[in-house]
Each structure stands twice: as structure tokens, then as C-alpha cells.
Image (cartoon, rainbow, N blue to C red):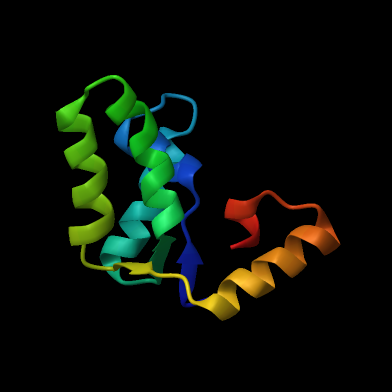
Length: 103
């Protein structure tokens, strides 16, 4: 494995230091930092991470998410192409996935 897609939950657990999942989240981000694999996030993940901080006016938390996902060596944001949207639609239909998971 050389890439790991980071869905919203582990990113939130890491930034917000969720006590139930923080050890696992730390292990993931430490491996990214060591260069064991590339962390990949989509713009949808970034958007989902920012909903609560924007809703509650938590500017510092907004910045933590943005910095982690856009300025961390070893994390790459991928942007959607039309082909990705088509495939995501097909995967949603075939496997009944939620949109972020299909993307």
C-alpha cells in the first residue's frame, strides 16, 4: 500500500483529539509523517471537516483542519474530475454507498 484515503472521521478524531479513537488516528498520521504512505483526501473531506467549526464560529479549529489537510507534507488533496463523478454515481447505485465513500 502506498496511498491511504483519509475519510472525514479519522481527520476529525485526530484534530479534535477524540479519546476513543485518538491512538489509532495518531498512528495513521505518524505513518504519513514518516513517509510510509501518502495520505489522500478529497475536497469533500475538507468540506465535511469544516461544517461544525464554521457553524459554531470556531476559527482556530477551522484553521487546524485547513492547515492539516492543505499544508502537511505527505497529504495530498485530490480534486474531482467528471469521470470521478460518473464512477461515484455508478458505485453509489451498485453498492448503496454514501457519496463521500463512493468518491
